[in-house]
Length: 101
Length: 252
Image (cartoon, rainbow over the protein chains, first blue to last red):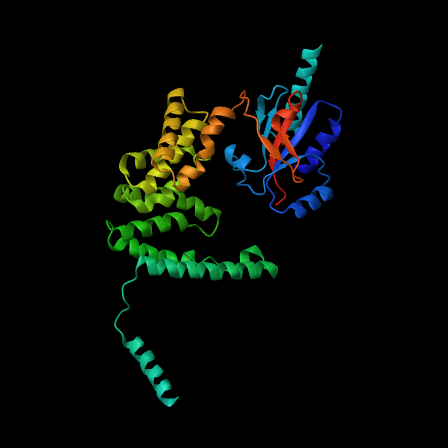
């Protein structure tokens, strides 16, 4: 997952796009070290465990769980990975451009 | 010292002469099995570390214990002890390879029917109800059929909470559920939370209504404020105007 996401973040660096993590690791130092190791540059909410407040409220039981939101904050795709995730994001970016033009 | 040795000898001799052991009980058998399984797990872990081939790993103690659980199940078929033994067999019996497992499938179904015929109202079915409820999205049939049967025949709180959880989850989350079934699913989860608030099932279901109300395709989830690893606060709504991938993850 991380290599795909890293590629997505790099490719869309100049687009109106953001990858936001809801991270469930328990050790801050290990998390920081591994972020450097794996090239994770994007921001994550720190939950401290899979039982943190947001995973609990959002009923998340499997990892990774992914939601794709459009520019208005609406959920447009769920649980897409790899190429399907890329396609879902590209489609929403194209929609934004179509609205502007 | 001499006396002790003599006493020990006597003890051994009398043990050998005793006509029969006390009848086996399920609790004793369960304890023995749990121990045997722990020992086996250790042996497997050690063997794996030593690079033993998969085929040469020690066999699970399940195979030695199955006849003993079977004997208990057959002793007094209407008794709770027999039912609990049947449940153990249903949950633990497995073949030694894929072909054997395939052959077992029909026998397992028969076993399950026998269990439900004789013990549908028993509280000891709670672990079965729990498994069925928690896996309802993977195997809607027969999970749905059995949970409906338990809904009709089992009045114990232990089983009821998982029936509500499973049928509620199915109604709320399955694409196959009709609008009426969806509404019924919501009602069941609300009943679970209202009537059994401290149950494991109620706790596990707390996010289900939120997801049904706010996390479907086309929904706009409520905003949240949170902090990153450095304690810096941000909100989901800070990213309005951008396409956002929200990823629940961890390195672990």
